[in-house]
Amino acid sequence: MNITIHASYLPHNDPDAAIAFYRDTLGFEVRNDVGYQGMRWITVGPPDQPGTSIVLHPPAADPGITDEERRTITEMMAKGTYGGINLATADLDATFERLQAGDAEVVQEPTDQPYGVRDCAFRDPAGNMVRIQQLR
Image (tube, rainbow, N blue to C red):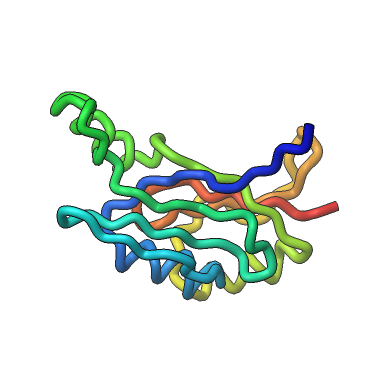
C-alpha cells in the first residue's frame, strides 16, 4: 500500500491574513481560493511539493455544527488550542529569523527539546500553532 499525505486542514477566521501569513511569511504558494456563500477555502503548499497541501477553511462551515459548538471552536481558536501543524526545514535558525522579521507571533524560539528534536513555534493569524522542526 502506498499512501501519502495529500491535504491537511487548518481553520482560518480572516482569509486575507491567512494568505499573508502562509504565502508572504512562510513562502507557500496559493493553489486555490474558493468562495462560497461568503466563506473562503484557501489551499496553500510548498512550491516544491505540489502533492502536499494545507486547506485553510472556515472553522464552522459544517451545517451539522451547533451554535454552542461554533462558540467553543471560536473560543479555542482565540486561545490557540483548536488547530496546529508541524512543518520542517533544513535551517531552523534562518527560518525562525525570517518568520520573526515577518511579524509572526513567536510562541517559542528555537529550542533543543528533551524528546530529540530542535524546533520553534509560532501562531498563525487564526491562532493555530505552527511548530517548525529542524530536519536531521
